[in-house]
Image 1 (cartoon, rainbow, N blue to C red):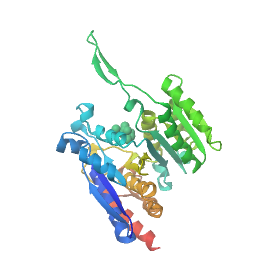
Image 2: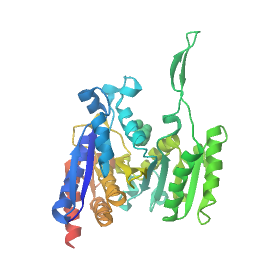
Image 3: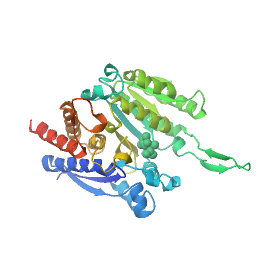
Image 4: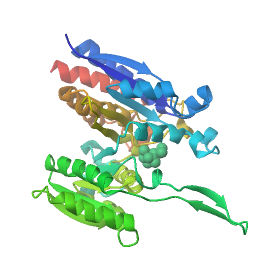
Length: 370
Ligand code: IPM
Ligand code: MG
């Protein structure tokens, strides 16, 4: 009997449901044509969950997430909920999922598909062949550090506080992920922080050096985060794996995304450590947000979400061949000149969200018949 993979789909807000609908089509195709069985459940997260339950992540949803082989998330957020207290904002649902399931390793590959070389805002020769991997720490740092809040001083002046904090073990576990992955790639890790002004950055640097001793074959360099941002747009191909914290990783991954042509192209995986049963939680989501300005218009690029599903097939479901099939289909569709608005170039064929989904499915069909 073939294994049934349990998937929890959390389409979320804005364009999330539209792009996730395309993933469902890809999953259905794999069932029909490849005999891969999925048990797909769907639930609310973010603003849609706030509207239904009064909070961005319902306990039942969290339980389902814990039980699933892989979680697929669309996007959260929107102007409707933007003024609420932090714990009642859509983003809090996403952060709670990451934290509760201890998915500390966020892998954000920035891969430039050859047909999109001209779509990048950088010169083609700078991005052609680009293949970098950002390894972002995802459950620590200033996103979760205490104390935090806004207080009013006796003078009446207000004061906003967040705390950047990392411990040795938090740094070690994410550093191991980066070094292990570099070993399967080109063997280089660039660790990025701000040790010139921050103690937490200095600790990061020192502890990464400690972990590096176990990886004599990996080249390690340290780069201040501001310089790293600059180097990413100056000469991005110097990088292989970039290892960085939660906040700098958020920033640097948006920069890296743009190198590939559009934020609409970048998938990500958030991976946890194995628990006592050998199960590691994993969530897959596009790097882009909920794009409320184009939500519901069938305009969004579904590729980042479809590529996130490919990562799920690779990292959680042991379906490498199917992951590759999807990635190759995406490449071929782009090579054939089909473009959603975000990657549109002169002379190319415009398609909407469904149209891009159609084309990718057709190409999967063609490739698997060959
Ligand atoms: C990301 C997003 C999130 C983050 C938001 C939506 C909370 O920007 O995944 O990059 O800041 O981590
Ligand atoms: Mg971000």
